[in-house]
Amino acid sequence: MSKSYQAIVVGAGPAGSSAALTMARAGLDVALVERGSFPGEKNMFGGVLHRMPSLEKIFPDFWERAPLERHIVKKGVTFMTGESCFSTTIEAGNYDRPPYNGYTIFRPSFDRWLADEAVAAGATLITRATVDDVVRKDGRISGVSIVGRSGQLHAPVVVAADGVLSFTAQKAGLRKATFDPAQMAVGVKALIDMPREMIDDRFGLVRDQGFANEFVGCTEGVRGGGFLYTNYDSLSVGLVFHLASLRTSGKTPYDLLNAFLEQPQMAKMVCGGRLQEYSAHLIPEGGYDMIPELVGDGILVTGDAAAFCNATGLNLEGINLASHSGVVAGEAVIAAHRAGDFSRYGLSSYKKMLEESFVIKDLKLFRNAPHMLHNNRIYQEYPEMMCSFMENIYKIEGAPKQSVTRQFLKSAKEKVGLGKLLADGFSAWRSL
Amino acid sequence: MNIDEIFDNTSFTIDREAHIVLDYDVCTGCDNRGCVNSCPARCYSWSEDEQKMTFVHDGCLECGTCYVVCHRNAFTRWRYPRGGFGVAYRMT
Ligand SMILES: Cc1cc2nc3c(=O)[nH]c(=O)nc-3n(C[C@H](O)[C@H](O)[C@H](O)COP(=O)(O)OP(=O)(O)OC[C@H]3O[C@@H](n4cnc5c(N)ncnc54)[C@H](O)[C@@H]3O)c2cc1C
Ligand code: SF4
Ligand code: SF4
Image 1 (cartoon, rainbow over the protein chains, first blue to last red):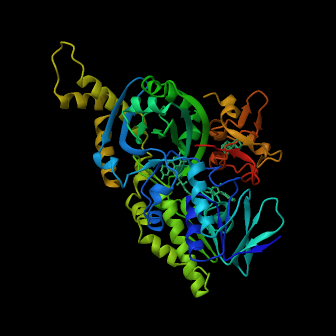
Image 2: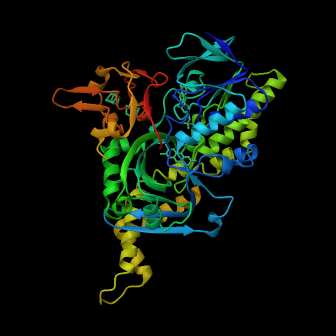
Image 3: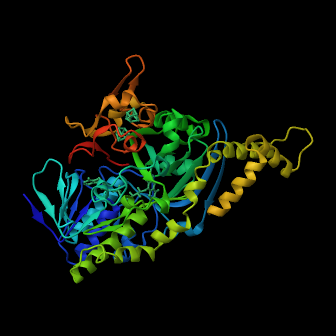
């Protein structure tokens, strides 16, 4: 059976639900199509939900409405070797007062909630529906077809919000047929059950306070890093690997994850916990240079489907960019309906609004970060250098001391090489 | 975390129809096999003795790694499972 709508959104992640919500609130008849049996069933991330400017505007009480876990008051970075680690943390009073700087969340509850808000605003949510192709009429996109169902869904405009692999954008000819492994990363995560009091005591937290820590040096030389985030009564612990590096390493994500969990200092942090769930997902990490065509005749691309992820090394931003681009896509569709023009020209306000927003501006600013992060030394030699330098600084063993500069140079020479250190410092400075 | 016990931790509604179908002939002549070590669910295994690739879609986490890592496009089909099938995360 075929059905017609004023707009179709493929994928009920943060991008898709934000788009559907925006359009439904403006009175458009919009279908939100999701392959999971509920929105969020298929989605995993680290993760920390950062500030959400566009949804905060739609819901002034966003932070009271959304299903959240702990707010992050403490952020840390750990340089790790097989048996040592050197950490820095920042805990700020401002992080402990609204507006909070970030929350841990669970995707199956957050994504479901956001889709429900779109439905409450009038959107039609169609779950258990995997879109497998776009429908064309007179050379433009006019709907989608669904695996195993005979009818099609029709609309003058389709929003591709189907995430990192976006087959919808591919079928519409907007993204390249193949991906470059150098522009992709995979994250694996262990969700570890742990009593709330144990988490509070172990990480120095009270009330609903949370801790978010990133790790470098925990991937046995594979380009990537690790994370540990606190939920109310569980920890999210995982690793992220650049695919170009992982595929030639011969190492497996689960063996590396196990080694990470068993590293002596890490083992103390997860001790007493129980594995609840194991998950994996891709991250588009190519930045600005990875962005596909964003607009076609009768179609817009948003969120991860458009590679709107900002991975600078210390933070990973995706949901905020996805949601903002979804809202902007919704606004562009509303404008196109008013003008009755769904061609790429009629929809072009989408690109303009994005270019004026933090989404494109930030991706442009960090355009060179992906190149810097492809430096293999960051993932092994530098963490070793940091740990050996700090270890020596605190060593008091009755032998005459060396100046701090000398000790630093000694660690640097042993672990990295001075010429490389200078070159890397220079390229890091240039790309950030 | 024991990858052989993935079904104890992560929930799946397994479809009899595979959403990923491999052309094994392409794999036999492959010079890389990055899929074997990169797949986070160990769905790919290569037998050196038999010179044979085995792929099982049951525990697939639908992450997309193999789709990106395979440089020979060995897939006669690579799509997400039919609606309602495949991995079902509860709280990740
Ligand atoms: C390990 C990891 C850690 C991360 N950490 C963070 C973090 O800390 N903070 C942060 O902000 N971001 C983080 N991200 C990034 C963030 O998760 C993404 O940027 C964000 O989810 C993108 O939202 P989206 O709506 O564009 O896509 P998705 O969330 O992927 O949603 C796409 C939706 O489309 C559906 N779908 C796909 N194909 C079809 C189809 N053919 N038919 C129907 N439905 C379909 C999917 O089921 C899904 O519901 C992380 C990602 C990973 C993998
Ligand atoms: S990389 Fe591709 S061709 Fe090579 S073994 Fe894996 S699936 Fe087969
Ligand atoms: S999609 Fe991911 S989990 Fe599934 S077979 Fe490919 S690499 Fe393995």
